[in-house]
Image 1: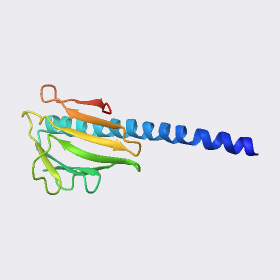
Image 2 (image 1 turned 180 degrees about the vertical axis):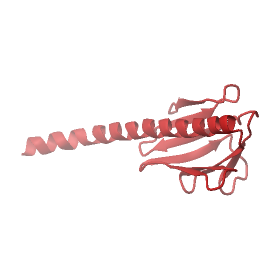
Image 3 (image 1 turned 60 degrees about the horizontal axis):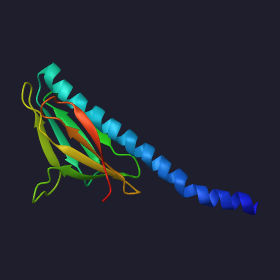
Length: 139
């Protein structure tokens, strides 16, 4: 019993770090899909879309001019929206972005972090309009 307890105690941190890594990867995939869906909807439906990014609520919301249209993405447990890049000097409250049909996509990044300090940034590429995920190396 003592050997089993010792092995479990030794392997537990590695297992939790692995689970947090999977959660971070899954959250960035969901974030990429959410942003891609917003850009695609703005172009295909020819409707302006508003993205509301709240670090306080740890969530994104998507609004349209279509009555009743609202989509929301909440980050999973252990994943936090750390920053919206580029950071605004006096950012109070959620960050709002407007996607206009036929317009340029804003070049923003959303940085997320897990409990172990691993970070990833999901950036909207202003040239292509597609999101891409970047890993942030620890210094």
